[in-house]
Length: 145
Image (tube, rainbow, N blue to C red):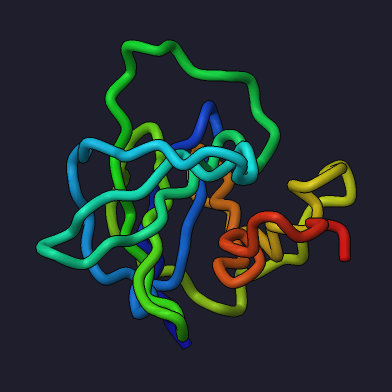
């Protein structure tokens, strides 16, 4: 059975989320910073009158900081409580993979990444990491819970 993923890059990682979870993809949007929130919350964006939280996936995955001049992309995700934006470095494409090629996350993943990446697909020449969207947007809670 084929499964479709929307892909994007964060640092050197190719990450995918199920296409049916993606509402839309946007270029960088101005954000309003929010004091005293988890570091991974980049701020709030106004999406056609709807205020949504923008989570910096690089910070959430505890990856090295990006260059301040880099313009982030927004992957707007549908969630039970409404939309949430994941800030990523670059947008990839929609890929269709055979679910029989799915493998569990590598045991070499550690820390927060080990809890947020739930599996992989081997794409020539890269590895597609499957993100647990629901866990990734749970900021302010211990990621290892």
